Image (cartoon, rainbow, N blue to C red):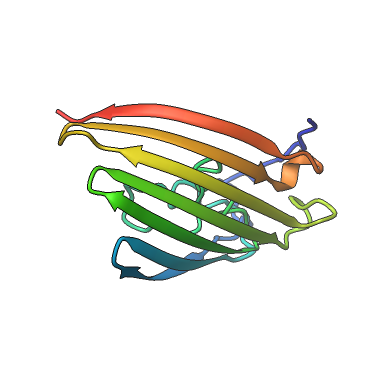
Length: 161
């Protein structure tokens, strides 16, 4: 696996350009199934608006993925799309599938393909009000991987006091 070096601009330099991002998501429930489509656009500024896509912020970018944690969708000069399908077979189980496509236009960060993709399948089991168990499979082909895809499985538990 080969990683490309990315140099971040000096934020104190007066010539650094601002980066602006916007996104929209539409979705609907169809009984136990829900579907959402999302689009995000980040302009060609010098900074990545990272962490805007994390779930606990005021201004989410809706095309974030589990593996990318929003860093992929926020690369400058990127348009991204995500489709998510969720299914609740019974009250304490949630199954989710998602596909994200990221079109990178900035030559500084891009590879020959100028794109990233992510496919994710996850399950959340909530046996009580305080405990949630998660498992996720992720296949990610990001711009810095030079054609190699990352296949990952994450398992985690959450306890709410």
